[in-house]
Image (cartoon, rainbow, N blue to C red):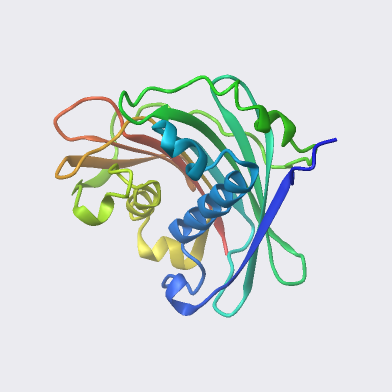
Length: 248
């Protein structure tokens, strides 16, 4: 039996600066903490950045879905638990559960990761990561898997030029910043009466400093939006998303 911890958890105390105008943690904040917890668990398992960066490799988030029944408010506690569900030669699937101080569940998240060569930017075979196999948990995540979002042919939105503050230490458009800009497609008056019950994002291509992007949303059904970020001058989509809103 493996002695590696198949689950890992970290607790955060929420303060006002973590929150939005609706006085609850922002979706980018939650996504960033989810990624931090995943990174820390990978480090403990010996397959994190400290272990693979010397090999010129890095983990990259491919897909993320977050489903929340309620978001933490200022002075509440957020506990994030994570575990690896499965992996194959291309991808690793990691899940999360978000809870309050009493153990009540805020929501869940699912994520899909792969490893790239930092020079070629191409994905690598991770079947040799033996500790992934040893670290798979049998814990069940009740959240439905991440779906696919079709390209948006027409919609409403805005353009955004990638700034220095959008670029992270891997020198690509930060995943949390992409979520932040996509969420801005939802008007404030909608967010005052509704909240994002489910958010899905598929990271498809890199965006670069000073690149001008088009962000658009399309309402597929009431309170169900598809969204897309792509270069203004054409080219492949940077990311595609789905946002499902629910009455407060």
